Image (cartoon, rainbow, N blue to C red):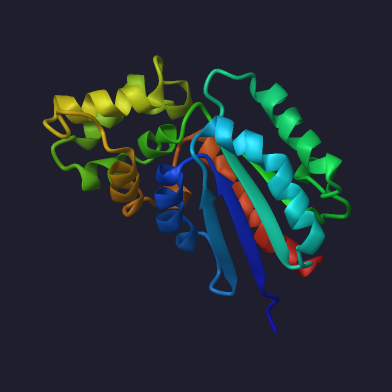
Length: 211
């Protein structure tokens, strides 16, 4: 019998929740369930994280895993990752960086520099959600490396949507995240941070066999 598993995902905001609710069913086998818990931004997530982790430590079953997804923004990615790993270790949970014989409880992952880079990472999905934006435009060098788009990926996405006559009064992040993610194919996404996130999820699924 295939082992079951449950994943608890802690994210910054509701736009990440909307995207993951569409994306994760395409990445997980049916026997792996998940729940997404959004916060009111990065500061709120980081402030609440020690308490939430301590709470998980008191009751988390062996077949549960926790995923923390946070935007890098302008932070040093290594320093932010160390900070998250330290929070995890301090409450007695095992982060991926300290996995023992393939077993860990918490996976820390960064969206570099923001979640919107993942949307640029799948031009076909973005164009399918917003047909006025041609795929060939999204394949230009400016957008080809999503995690390195200058000036911020959220700003770039809002700009390109406005330029093609979408959301002239401002980008509704939750609606946009839900719309684009509905068409996303995890296997073709060219955002490096998304690929690392996907690989981490795959490792969680594989860890069922060694738990």
